[in-house]
Image 1 (tube, helix red, strand yellow):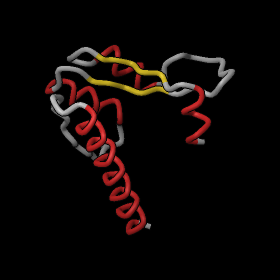
Image 2 (cartoon, one colour):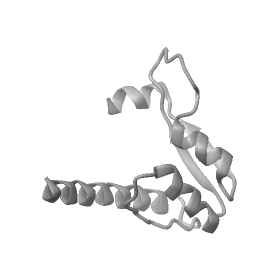
Image 3 (cartoon, rainbow, N blue to C red):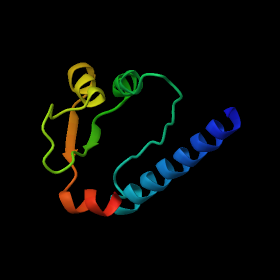
Length: 100
C-alpha cells in the first residue's frame, strides 16, 4: 500500500506541474512557484505558504443545487488565517460538468 501512495503522490505532483506550466504559458509575466508538501493539514500548509506569497488563489466548486456552507473547511481556514490576500475563484457549471 505504501508503494501505491508514493505512486499516487507522484501523479499528483505531475498534474500540479502541468497546471503550473499552463499558467506560466498563459501569463508569462507572472511568477508561479510549484511546491508540493506532504502533510495531514492542507489548510496548515497553505497558511504557512501564505507567509511567502503576495497572493493565494483558491478555486472552488459546488455541485449545482448545493445547499450548505459556501466555503469548504480548507478555504474557510485560509481566508481567516492567511498572511496575504486570498482570491477565491468559483468554477463555472459547464466546467464542473466536463470534469465530472
